[in-house]
Image 1 (tube, helix red, strand yellow):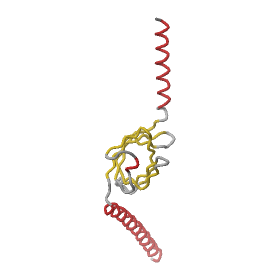
Image 2 (tube, rainbow, N blue to C red):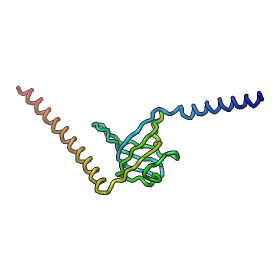
Image 3 (spheres, one colour):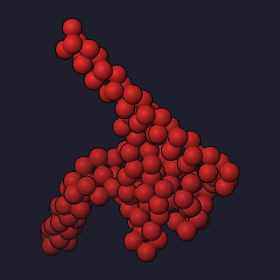
Image 4 (cartoon, helix red, strand yellow):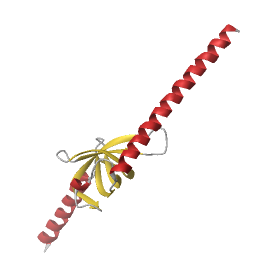
Length: 147
């Protein structure tokens, strides 16, 4: 009886210790939403442009693992560039981001092209505005020096 109890306790302690090591690298869990700008089924990676609503919109690469759950699609092969996705992920201390679950919303080709064009046009407008502001500031500085 004592041997069985001792063995059970040792197994439980061993299991708890290994599970803590397994999750020791976990740093952050979050969720995101964006447009798929790239997918590599061989490397099991997904690149998503996240619209954060600020000037610092970004594209990030996420890993798709064997435990990733897919909604509205059967697998990663059902995801296409231009699709809108919402997903939960875990970011590890090494910087890798693993998708836990993902929902994909198919974009029609017209919508996809419109979003791409709209984003490109918006980016060009923002760049032009910054250039115009810079030129105006330089002009004002030169006028101030002349006076």
